[in-house]
Image (cartoon, rainbow, N blue to C red; front, side, top):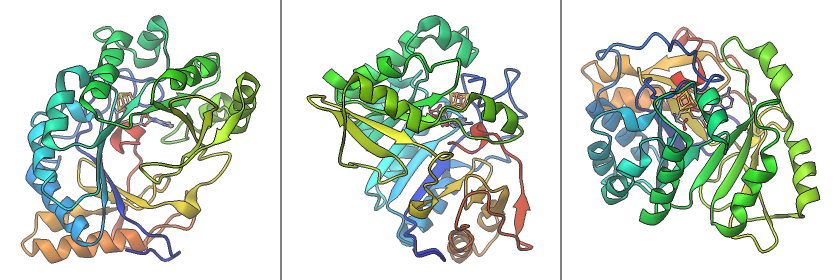
Length: 329
Ligand code: SAM
Ligand code: SF4
């Protein structure tokens, strides 16, 4: 489907849970968030019906996210069911903690690939960033290896850049692409919820990161590959992998936006940066389901603002202030 600004919208990001086994300090408060009740969260059957309607409207790419999608019980069976739909790219974004346990089953169920979020390659810092005592960097590293072994590829490693936290590891991350087919993506931290002042202080511009990496070795523009999202790709000469840059702040990617988002509690977000959302749960829990779902999906596509921070207001839209963990990235 096309939106009002002639963008093809064929990508649905689906948050399957608001729960997470980590507490990355820039994403979720250490004490956690007020979790939705079981009844508030869409069931797998409801998620399946919404995704099926989306594929019938022409959505070709589906990404499962969270919270942490691998903490929701039954995720492998759910993916097996989704695999029967007409989806070109079925992917999942994870913190990687449970990936060594699930990678083989996820692959067998029909998942195409994973994106793994990792903001540091240092064990102590990993504990600090994720505020976690139960899990460690080595869990994620094992997860990456297992995902590579079973072929959940190409694997994209997402690194959110934060001044004073991981800006001294940019080269270390980039080096990972030399011998392995990993795609390391540097992402500018985004303002969401109430963290605008904090983000201003901690933001690192992708332009600066490119300058730093170009001193290490020349960055050569590379093919986009799978995903067709907001990242711009480069590689070092002789490198097996690639480096991607996602700069929501220093370089607006809105003109090429191809997605809408479904939250775990059943709201459609036309734009990551807009608070206004459509309640699709109401449609799915009413009687005339199938038509209703398509209608709300279309309404969400047509409400996409030209540029982030847009506020598409009509009586059907509700205003919800969410953290990233409640949206899914
Ligand atoms: N738990 C999974 C994970 O960490 O990959 C999936 C959900 S998480 C919300 C998705 C992505 O959002 C992660 O890569 C995380 O680093 C990113 N994220 C969270 N808060 C962010 C922010 N304020 N700016 C940019 N990225 C953010
Ligand atoms: Fe959890 Fe992912 Fe947010 Fe970290 S970034 S707290 S792993 S949802």
